[in-house]
Length: 296
Image (cartoon, rainbow, N blue to C red):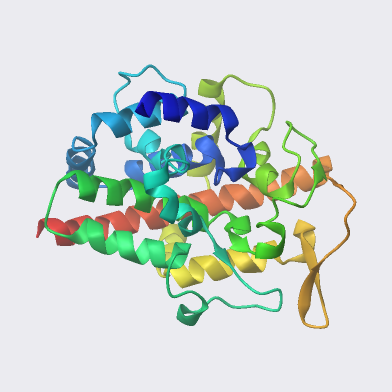
């Protein structure tokens, strides 16, 4: 029954509903894992060993891998999307983002009290910190890795009226992403036609160049509200083409499909690369703090 339901989910899933895209989440978590100490990596591996066979299957099928493919942290971070359409996880759908009013310029603790990404990060950090290594703490690890990727994708801190940019149509420069949210999730990551393996290698190398130690330390001096505000500032900036402030409200520019130019693609690709590097660095710092407390 589970396999049938999951298969149906894959068949009818909308591309634009997946946060940051499979590759983006894998890159963030792989880079985060590489920044961890050996002992913290072992803690992550011990938690992944607790992931159920059912959830391993969900991840591998979502990524179109063989069912018995060993679970890595990079792949585990896609789990929150792999199970998004299963009824028992329905309550987590709104945890992937935070919606604000069109006159909002700042995310604070009062912006969202529950069921949004800033709360999700806090909740799963605390669950992961609990002195247990079991299936529930493994799920908290997978959720947390996913949330750090999502909050750094600017369109996950945007407006409900257009479904976080999913209703803003674009003519793509690369790929087939036909709305601006989907384009930032996926198509910005494609510099040229490549195999998946070559593309992953390319991005890991590129992202590593954005993370000198002095910059990483600066990025780590922040929390989930800072990260959300960074995304909000980006998504409402004129350069993104999502909206422009007029009379205190960030209004959509028009209803005509936005043509993604090569110039836009390259400029915002670099912006997204920086966001992924920040996400990886901050995830590594959060995991180090949480898992060290857990194991103390």
